[in-house]
Amino acid sequence: MSLTPFHVAVQVRDIAEARRFYGGVLGCSEGRSAPEWVDFNLYGHQFVCHLNPALGPDGRLGSHFNPVDGHGVPVPHCGVVLEPEAWRQLVERLRQQPIEWVIEPTTRFPGTPGEQSTLFILDPTGNALEFKSFRNIDAQLFAT
Image (cartoon, helix red, strand yellow):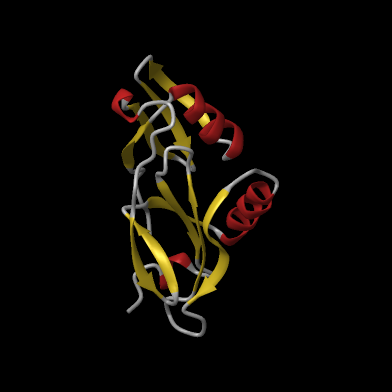
């Protein structure tokens, strides 16, 4: 399967804080930017943080939590499907950071075609991010 990069944009309360989180904590390289927005390379995808001054310096976005496999999954959320080794490396990196976990690294749907390793975190503004991995992405990503 050959996929093209996605583009997703989220709102943040502070651009410098977003740079520290996405660049420093997640290790994303920075692309173009302006005072009100900044592009990041999130595993080959264009992830853009747009400043929302109405949130204020302590503002937080809220999420609805949908029950899935015994966990409260935040909605909305976005993220990336990673190869197993890249997912393990990200888990190791995140365990060294002061992360706000929503769902710590776990295996969901064990023994089914949709079995996956997954984790959910929040950025400082409250944007929910999911990172998941399948043993065989091509066979499992859209398995029924």
